[in-house]
Image (cartoon, rainbow, N blue to C red; front, side, top):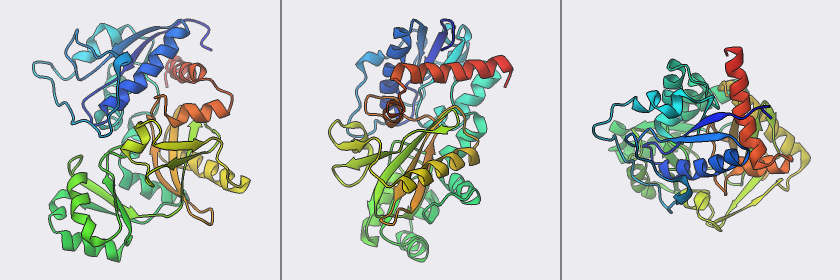
Length: 345
């Protein structure tokens, strides 16, 4: 695609609870790019110089790991000035969650003059903040379930939070950290008596929780690549909810690609996915998640600006339905970034 071989730095790991997912994503990306003849250099911002996790050994557990925290004795930006980044034509960001997905790493790369894949600073920050993203969805005409935002200081008063839920989105509800991905800290709360445990879990992963109305129905996702919506994929988790375990444990979910839904449902999902990405200033590629009720009404849950690239991931699955191999997909993502860099965008 690029017409020449590229030197590509792959950012992986990091110190967020999605570290394992990131390393697994990077393993697939690196293998595909090397098979295309590109030179690939792994860079883990959370590890000291000279110390690396081997992506080939990546394993995702049933629960997200505890964040590994800051590495002692390492300056925060050492990885930016290392050989991997400074000599790269393109930086492929395979980080998930935390500073890797909220615009922080994107800002550092821009300050360093590096060309990188995916959404820029603003879009990354907006997409990671579910509360702000949903406000923009509604302005763009994208339907989203009603929700409230609960901060840590308020969370100690369970009765007050329950009252806000009853007056707002109502029970049953879904509780999740406002600025996490991969369903980290997710809980289904059928009634007020189950709220305390859900808040306790959620606040392990952030200081703000989004509590939204549970939408009975089906889980759908739409991948967007270079401004075009790929075929809709339906996610059917064996346990009823597409949580962290269902996402990353083989056999815990099955998928229909393309989804067996009426054509008008699929077209509306694709249209709203494109609107959601435009509302958040996304670029290159993203994945938009929905719940669809029995009438076919879609409710946008979130936009993932750095969707997973593991063997169980949904963007490669949707791309395959559109006739795009995994190798073509990851190479195209790099080429889009490279061409943007050449234009000075």
